[in-house]
Image (spheres, rainbow, N blue to C red):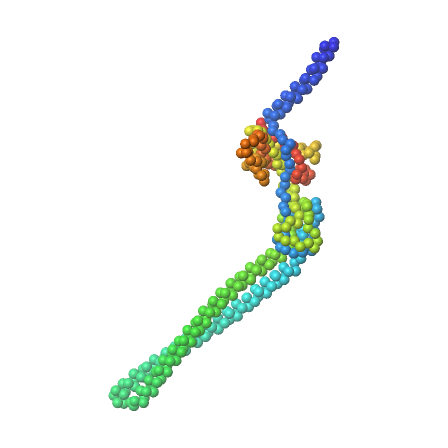
Length: 338
């Protein structure tokens, strides 16, 4: 009887042990697991695009916000003045262009008048040339006095001088028109620059309201009322909690049978009763040690082989219960490889 009890006791101990060992071996054949896994999310640093003093803060730490919600307001008086100044510059350039175009219209009239004067002087000169030819013929026949020829020759010289003067005046009017065209072109260029300055001024004015770029939760808020803020200086962090995934670090010896798209079970340490499902989305292009600030140097003569870990990105199948998760939480990941 004691022997029977001993055998029974051994069996009671051995059977669960064998079953457990068998299950463990079977589980290892079909799954790869790691507890070196952490939740990750996109964390956006909120910083202003313009400089100024903070006049209003609309959010607190841990507050949920929607895209385009106003988070911080910067004193906009300087930026409003720049918009008004740019608008005034545009008005001035437009008025100048209108004046120049009116002058150009008047200049065309002057050119037409100068052209008409040239035509009139040329016609008069041609008539005088005919009179001169006629007087010369009369003198040759003895029918006209020498004084008549002198008078006509004087009129001819005067007409020639008037023609040169009219031509010079017409040339000056054309030059003045060309000058107006150049000035109009330059003013139009200044107008375009003023319009660009207005656009930039309006953009800067709009940026005095710092808005949420995406939906998320505010964290690490460091901005204070009345603080002088500058572009590039973080005011707060915005955690995009709707875009959360797991970064699981697997040993290099576990990667042989792992593939993209394989189903994954995730358990988060903070919620031990919560089981989430997902899939393998991607693998890092290098082991984690390769991205460290000071990569390990093995060419020193002292070498100890260490199993490397390769990060894998695990995405969730469903957004259900995602709102409970927070970046940085630890997790256990189980990948079904067969």
